[in-house]
Image (cartoon, rainbow, N blue to C red; front, side, top):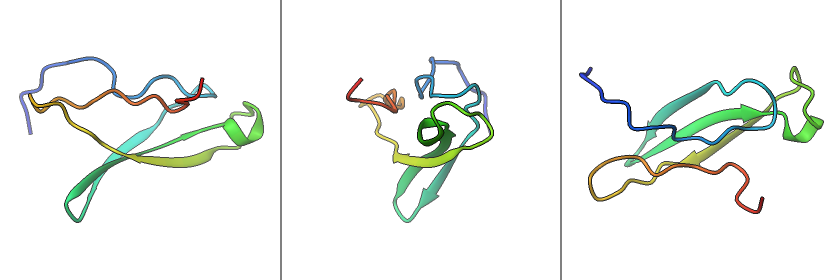
Length: 71
């Protein structure tokens, strides 16, 4: 429940203007769920739900996520 120290962003900006996300534990892994507008060419009200497993550094910080690694 805290205290927390800001360490930077964990998800790079996505296509569309919103990046609502949630972190969820399922079994022994943690996942980031988020959405973008990639399938609708940026039409903001047509969102595409995505998820990715969180990866951690040796010090326990979360590794940044690039939602479009080929870009």
